[in-house]
Image (tube, rainbow, N blue to C red):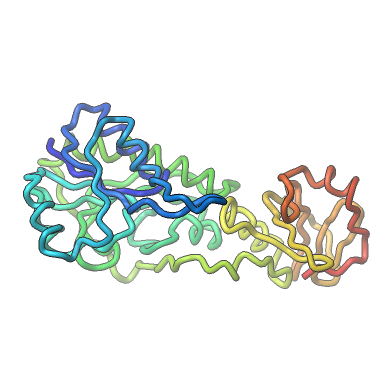
Length: 301
């Protein structure tokens, strides 16, 4: 098939590579423009842009798809379908209508649950035992289009980074299978009554709230790993918690209960197992405590 691929972050790269490996004719790749990054703030290409360069594909990076010249250039590609994976720009109706089979989105949830910007993190925070990938026909609404295929995976005990990487591989396989069967698939409308919204993550949410249950705090640790990073503060310093385990102990909310940094929550307690001080590398908590003890009785924020 003649495919336009539209994506930006690492999540979209496996799908781009899978479509190329499957022999599809990728006539253009659309990605977000290079952004300033690193200490020098030099423009850096997106993960999809770099992968497309490696594959020898044409890359287009418009800041917007609203100008008439962008709509015309998109339509002129005469694509059978556009495949979209975390692209980051709103597609207007002219773009949605241009390919023969429209635009298909690789969405990282089991729709209609968790429409929106942060479906992986919200699934973890909510304690969903499973999540997955849905291939949907795009329309003007936010992730409201009819569904073509889906695939599920377990969400328990995985960080957002781990789960996103797994879903990226699932999405890559599923979009190839979907395109192979596209002519015989019937799109299924979403049940609006079951829809939930995955609001964008606010950095303020990453501060651990020890008044919550230990289960909720542990989910937050996983949901905000790797970014923005769940944290607490002690003596004016920020400590990112990269992994934690639940303890059955109890005590005053936010109090350190022992010399292993077990922290009392509203119900139960958690024990960080992997931690990072500001400006330092990640380390096991036991290693941190050997050089920077946080004694029992300390109250954390």
